[in-house]
View (tube, rainbow, N blue to C red):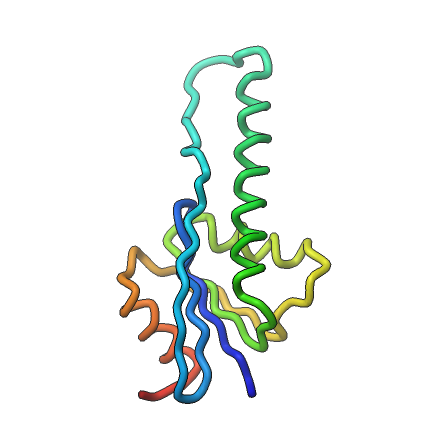
Length: 128
């Protein structure tokens, strides 16, 4: 059985939709990642760099948790409104874990869970 997965992701949460003929499940993973502050002005003697490293580590742990929740995937659709979708795809590429054979990335604004499910089903040609 082919397992198609869609992930709508931003830096706060991910909605994972697993879809196969006649069966759709959803799971939500919250990130727990601190918001990234925007610094203005000069350097702060390394504090900004340390914060950036900690923020990156938090995001990597979050993305790894989403990947763990996805399980074995045949095809993957990554959706999202900002940078997270590209960062997530890059994280998949850096891991040694088996990745999906086909990965598509699409921009998508904030969507409700039913809208995410509909978008994933449409992408993979899965009817009701």
